[in-house]
Length: 315
Image (tube, rainbow, N blue to C red; front, top):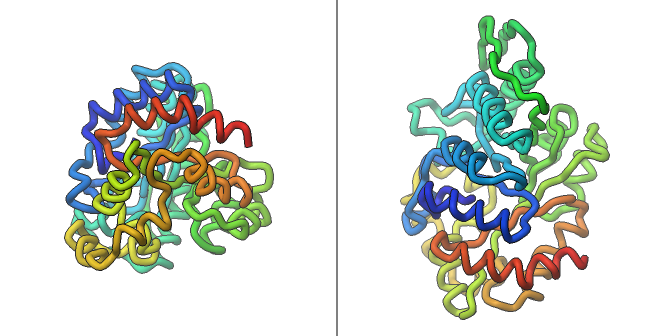
């Protein structure tokens, strides 16, 4: 459920269709604004999650990912996560990450350097975990956050698993120590090795990649270029640019052919499988698929049910 490319009611319709088609789990982005103006949307992810929980029965839900260091205080993130876990009947996982300037600067705070963001994230995870564990009076005095006599009054029967996004050795070590789930977008085996050596052995590893299904491959390439050419900038760039206009400028010379090299486009199921296969080879246990183009979700879901999901499960 990519909030940057679909209206909230469309996201809810899409997840209901995805459940009926046999998808195992879903993820939702938690953004304040889109990467590029051409994507055109950015509803409030937590309202969408509540509606998604109400219209589905089986499919898993997960934030991919929520940043708990500026736009949201970690105590509020814990309250939201507990509520969604109750509403979904135990199907929710809380994915957390250090965030992007794109979404966090809107509250007027200074965008911290990457080392400070990781410090803030570790403090936030400690607070969230304590509250979700049901501690009756959480008091926390940290370098970045304070919490005074906080308690969650509605706790789910099923604990909320916490996932942490990784991109290098430091974040992998944090995830290995603190997380129940590893979250990643790079099919690199060393990320999983670092995570497991830091305490993550045997825990789920959830990857994500974009694809662009269309019966017309040229149309798919054009749409991927229009809406997803920012993806190749890498997270060191993506984390720091402040608004869609910045991403427009940073990607003005990216060509459709360059996008098509990175993202599987068109109707050939084997092309899509070959882009997904490296995640399995690296050791990921689950892979979330982002279909590019919000108005094309139903045709993607229909095609995935017929062709893509059987091909992936045969692996």
